[in-house]
Length: 127
Image (tube, rainbow, N blue to C red; front, top):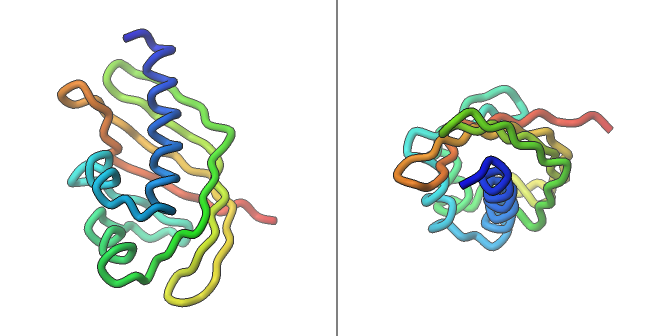
């Protein structure tokens, strides 16, 4: 696989991740997010895969109604990739409506021929 092919695949994975939150596709999220994945969220907290998935699927604290990504850039380093972009997300958290613009960074590693996201970071974009 060329670097261009790998970059294209990672851009598609990011688009599928955005759709998975909206479509509540837990299977896809569990497939792509490594067991030890964690995110540094927009408030600066560190949240584990287990915590995030529980909020979205077990307790319904997090509901994503729409998610759009753009301005995605991929940097490849062998079997590791850093993907950054911008996302527009709307939905609710703990019953309160939200609409946020974020810059994100996702770190992927290739294991057994497939990409897994091992870490994420989100920073709010000021209006």
